[in-house]
Image (cartoon, rainbow, N blue to C red; front, side, top):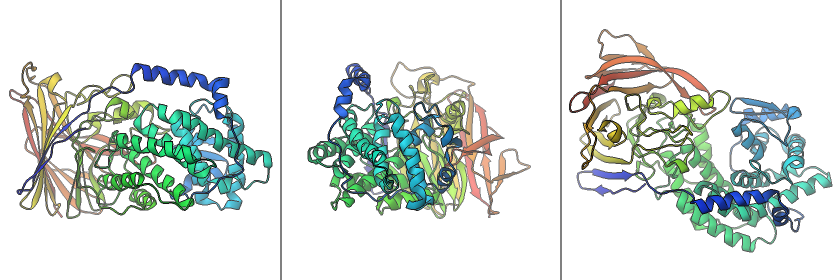
Length: 578
C-alpha cells in the first residue's frame, strides 16, 4: 500500500492510498516448497535434524505475556479449552489431533503452558505440563509433519517451551527430560531449513524469531544467530509498514507480532544482552499502530477479522512490549484513521483491503467506521471473522467478512471487494482517496473508494465530521459516477442501496414519531438521536463478537434507498441529547 501525503498550513492532509499489486510465491518457489515438505518423511530430512543433544538450555527467558486463567483452570481439571471447544486429555490422540484448527494450533504451539502458569505454581503445574508434553512428544516429536511442524507452530513451540521450561523440566525422569531437550535441538534445526521457505512474510518472521531464540538459548549458536537476525530483519521489513501496521491490516496479527517480539526480547535479556535495534524499532512502531485502533475505553475495535478486544488485554500486551507510546492519529499505510474528540473516538477504515496472500480473513470493509463515547460503543462492526470456533462456524465467519457486516454503504447487497468461493479476497477496491482537515471546532474526513466502479459505475464517497466536543457526528454517503477515463461502465439506475450502522452492546432503540429519526438509550442512561434526510430508516437484527469468539445479539440501523440518475446522496447525523 502506497500513499502520497501533504500537510499545509490550513491543516489539510490528503492522500491517495493504492492497493498493492504483485503475486505471492512464484510457481518455482511453490514447487520448491512442496518438494521440501515431501522430504520431511525421508531419511534426508531426518538426517538434517540429527546432531549433538545439548545438556540444558543456556538461559530461561521470563515470559512477559499474560496467560488466560479460565483456560488454565480447565487444564488443572484435565481439559483443553479454547474458543468454546473442550477436549479432555484422557480422550486425546496426539498422533492425529482431529480437532478444530485453532485448538490444534493451541496444543501444538504449547500456548497452554502460559495459561497453566497463570493459575498454578511450579509444584502444582509441573506434573500437568509433563503429562501433556510427554504424550505430545511421543506422538509428534520424531514425526516431521504438518500442522505440528509448520513453521509458525514450531517457532512458537520453541519459545513457549523455553519460557515454560521450569514447568516442563521439573521432572526427575531422565528419559523424559532428554526427550524435551532433544526436541529443542530438533526444532531449531528444522527452523534453520524451513524459516526461509515459509509461504508468507509473516510466517517467515515467526520462523526467523524461532531461529534467533534457538541461537540464544542453545549451545553453538553464533552462526545461527547471525543468519537468524539477518533473516528476521529482512522479514520484518516486508511484514511491517513504515507506520507500524502489518501488511495483512489485521489487528489480531499485529498483536501476535508484538507478543512474539516481546518474548524474543526476553531471550536476549536472559543472556544479559540488549536486543538489536531493528527489533526494538519494529516494536516501537507496532505498538502505537495498534493503539491507534483503540476506543475511548482502551479496548480494540473490530477490523479485518478481529473482535472487540477488552482494554485489559491490550494493556497487558503493551506492558509486555515495554513500549510507551501514544496512539497513532492516522496511519496511511496501515490504512486507518483515528479522531479523538472529548470523550468520543471515531475510527475509520480508510484503506483498500489486504491482498489475498496476506490475510485468510480479510474483510470487504473499506470506509466502515466505529464510534465510541466513554465506555459505550455506539457504532461498531460485527467483527470476529478470524475467530472461527465452536460459536462461530465457517459459514458465519464468511458472513462476518462481508461489506454488510460493517458500518458502511453496501450497493445491491454486493461486497465492495469480492470474497471468492475459496475464501480469498478478489477484485474490488483498488484506490482510496482521502482528505482530512481540522476545521473550526471539528475534524472533517472525506474518503472515497472505487470498489463498485466496474460493476455498477459508481464511486462511494463518505464525509464524516466529528465535533471537537465529541457530542455530534455528521455524515454524508454519496454515490457518484466514476470519473476515470474510458472505457467505463454506464452507472446503473434503481440499484438497491443500504447504509448500515451496527449498534454496540446494551443500546435500546426508543420508538420515535418521526420516521427519519431513531432515539438511542445507552446503558449509562444517556440518550443519542440518529437522524437521516434521505432514504428510509429501518431497524434490523445484528451481532457483535467478543474477544472469546462469542457472538452477542444487537441491532442495526439501516438507511435504504435506490440509485437514481446521477447517483445518490444521503445525509445523516448522530447527536448526543443528554
